[in-house]
Image 1 (cartoon, helix red, strand yellow):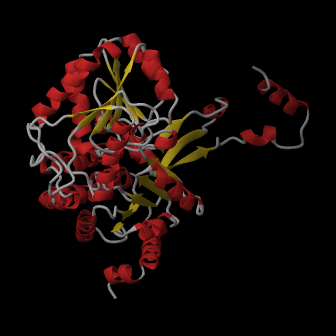
Image 2 (cartoon, helix red, strand yellow; image 1 turned 180 degrees about the vertical axis):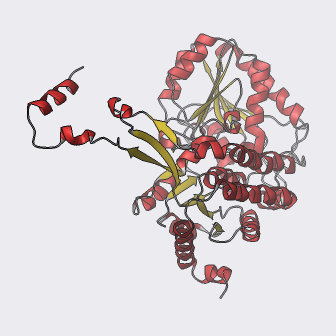
Image 3 (spheres, helix red, strand yellow; image 1 turned 30 degrees about the vertical axis):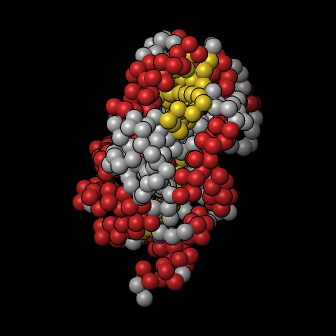
Length: 482
């Protein structure tokens, strides 16, 4: 029976067998050399380059329609960037770090301290549907750099892309290096219960509770990259035209199906009309038409389409003003896909569902404020978001917004873009996530920081061994002070 047949007949047993095989390979082979780590990274880059057209086609089919150009930007180039960065830096990351010896007198006698970064072993990766390739290959940059092996559970909502990735990895890696397990929720539940050495989950906060609970059965350390309602605060000193362009780009990329997409925007009360006009102009410049525009992406499936249209119906029923940004005034009631025009929701109230749930679509509530502290208080009254965005040229106000709020990360005078800075940690805080990866932070996440201490050659510990007496008390007394 082939490995593929075994997975179909007994996916749980097959996953456990692969985990055992990968762990035994870790023990037998020891930490991989820098050359092998680079080779694994190079193979991943080669897969992305060689399959870029197939990736774009699979994602287009899975979404009903997904912009090919956006896929090349986000899932292909967006995966190659982190892999190249890790390749260029992993030798430096692998070097032991010298640490201070305390008390310093021990160093005079030859004592030394350092941290060595060991591969944790086998890392489980549960990747989502919105950027299924990038959020599988991107984490592999840190996993491979750390010298680990990987098992991947991709999303069942993008089945063609998941199966394509499984084929790609089988062609370039032995199953003891990387293995992929497509399947539904039952496969995901069994996957999250495996005794990995680390587990990375990217997805909804509601699912993260189940993943973390399952991982806790084996005390598996977890990194959770979730989401939440990432706010935008537009200051009075901001360039409104530029702010609108950048906010609407972040809201329309992948049709807003991004964990870091701006979820609502605060603008000064006297500038709301100017922001709306700027948003209308920005969308018209990017998408003169929407319905058949190959650059505008569909909502991934019927369930999410109905969820989003439900938000609009609820907001309208409760008194919000709905502004559809539809430059060609196209009729979306009859269409082959699940496209929704970018839409502003003006004057939203807290009882509206759109202000309670993460939107994950091209809908943008616009709120107004009299004083920036009102916007800060609103953000702080809600769960801590994955991203926070400030627009403005007032350094004091920027400092106030950033110091008085907490979020996973921040982009100033832009949205989303901090995630592309590979030398910055990426992760959430509280309900928006736990732990971080990217760059050296990913290397450290998937490594065990092992403390190593070399004692001095003279018998310096003789003074702290029994029998205790006056000399011992004098030594201890010298340490018990400010």
